[in-house]
Length: 117
Image (cartoon, rainbow, N blue to C red):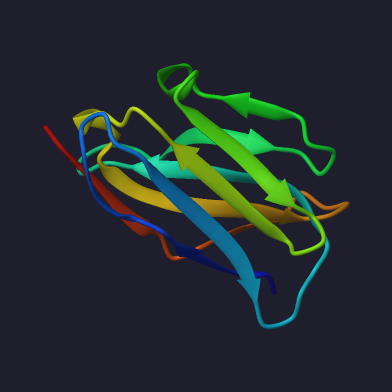
């Protein structure tokens, strides 16, 4: 079972930056697609960004040009650099990863990001 641990959330002012990290704990598995989702209070969880094992990326329109996803396959980590943060980016951010060569997905516990105006 893939275990994911996020870090790096916190409080930022509008226009500021935060960097989220996600790493495996316990047994390390080879990972396929990895990504970040977020869920704001009263809203459904939504995709923020995804990156394939080969490094191809895809972003939600609302973060394009502001957020950058990256990964280190050797370390089985994925990061999300968030710049020019907006109050509407406030949410719990979840790391997501699939075991390589499968479509089974796993979630981290989530990390809170709060952006003040």
